[in-house]
Image (cartoon, rainbow, N blue to C red; front, side, top):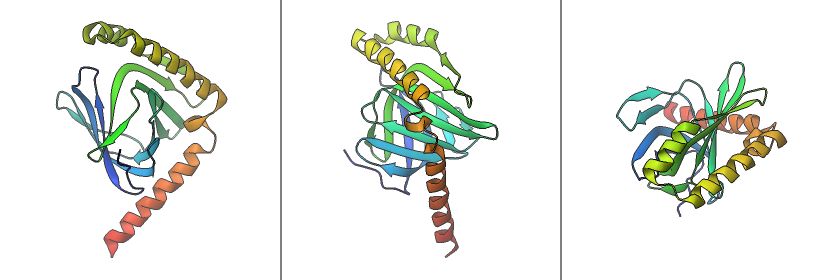
Length: 184
């Protein structure tokens, strides 16, 4: 598998279990790229939905993808703190300059005070039937919800105290480099 280079701009492609496209984020800057982890950042990036509708993200976000975990984590940097939107998903692959994964409907929203809400359980049950999620996928996803909640409680990974500061500073560094290149 190819690995994206730090500082380059890539896309993020979210699919559904049946192979249909779900959502595309058009520009995300790579802050770290290895075969196991990609950390990216975006701010006011264009997003295209499966039905063709488009919208812009509202705030800077740090995005965390891991090749061995069945979730990805979007850290949204807002005035009143960091909000985390965690998608239960397949592990990512990097292909044709894009992070690609299957979105499995269940989402965990974590608030700045570390309280959380599990979202879209009805949608998950509906799609599980419609798209025929195998039992093994159901078990993996439920195990990974538990793992994700333990990360929140233990302040592990993107929930660690210094994660946001380190990666926000890296993002600002690359943005400064890009704007200096454009000036010269």
